[in-house]
Image (tube, rainbow, N blue to C red; front, side, top):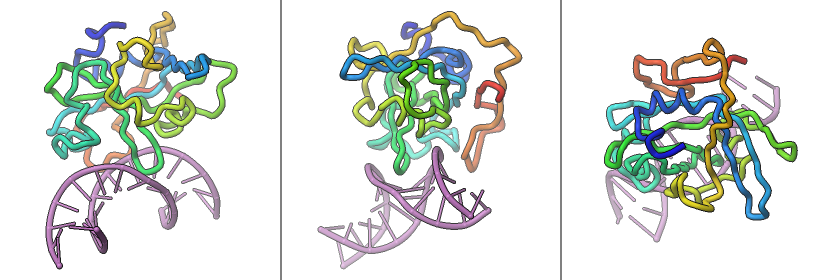
Length: 174
DNA sequence: AGGAAGATCTACT
DNA sequence: GTAGATCTTCCTA
């Protein structure tokens, strides 16, 4: 998928990322693959649940970067994997919350944003890189798999104190 | 349900 | 330079 996929409203991107495959290439050449089954959309300063609400800081600055930028933010012990959406100068991103491991050699589950990055060996060094950089070790591909329309559910975002009056979480039932 | 985890920012000295 | 507040996931009751 090219930049135009990410250069849209994060709510649309979040929904369209469901079913896509994360491909993580390790330094030793091994591939770890996982199908995305849960995402959340985050907007700019006006979104009370978005990291952008603090204004630009060292750890969230990439939210204002161009579409397809990788944003890795750490929350205590864990890393959160996000993809920046919309054009440069507008803060928005999609948080990847869960995935189904597809590789046989996969160790660990991806049943939460912190666990997912741990299983895929994604850490802060990815922050600020672009999904379109060659050999960045991380990309998203569309393998043609489609969930049925009724399988994709929506809800309010998880772990959020003050949410917008909108359902910005997308996930696969069960 | 409650508790533990580390980086970052602010406000002080 | 340092002390304190803040932030959210994940694990174990």
